[in-house]
Image 1 (cartoon, rainbow, N blue to C red):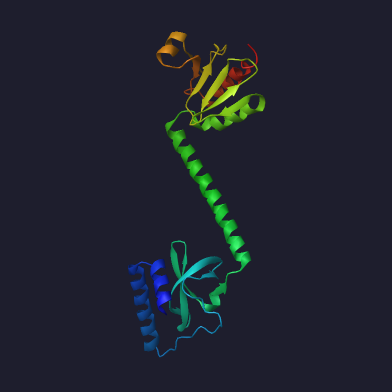
Image 2 (tube, one colour):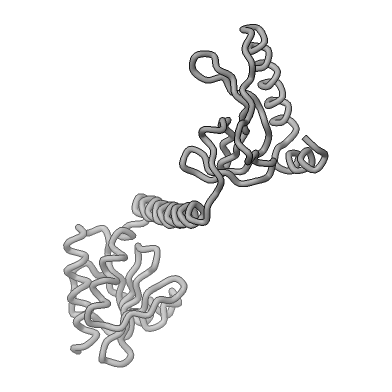
Length: 236
């Protein structure tokens, strides 16, 4: 290993890991000597330098160091230490191949798919946490989907604004759930609604809000009431 390779290795591995690899080399080499075995050399013309990308075990990794691997039947081989993300594994010549453009495209596609899946998982976990702490948060998507069928829905930073054909009327659905404000009109729907007087709205800085939905009621009742309130955006 020349000086350039050593410098590259030190950029890829911390001192503790380099020492662990060195101890592993001494241990496996000592066992080969004890058994009177010869370490098989890398026979191919292509020998990956430290820092190069290789394809092994179906993934693309980076060569970080060299070592010795014992396989079945106490056969010893020159090997590579290859890093795949946070994992560092040994790979002998028969397990390693040069990286093709197809390999890179496939890994890039897989990475993007994993990233999307991870994002969806995180978002679902957030929704589940909100559902445990914020009443009605699990109904937000259903409410927005219902409203989008016949009404105009504008997403703001913290709420969805739903409007119809009657000017001055709007229904505001909190993005994180737990709150639906009825603004600009007194709803005819008395079920699942807590009415707010103009005086109370002024005191609470709610502007033209004249009612808020009650999420302590059963989900089907809340959604039925929401559907009836939406109708009033077009029909006074």
